[in-house]
Length: 46
Image (tube, rainbow, N blue to C red; front, side, top):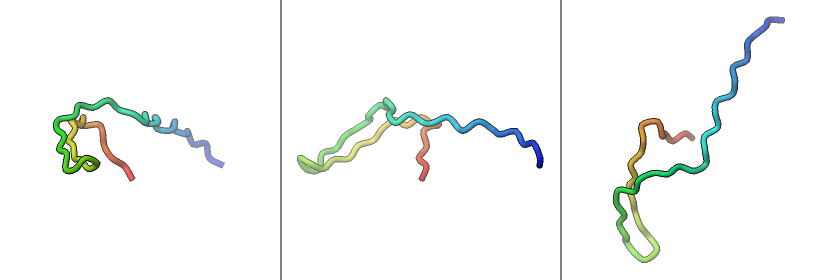
């Protein structure tokens, strides 16, 4: 059996982020698009 140092689990990302909304376009009263100022370290993972 070999001794392997276990690395700590990655830090869990927060479920919420405060980001600046750059613009909002209302297509209808229930449908809209928007853009945000996203920091470089804010990436989407699947």
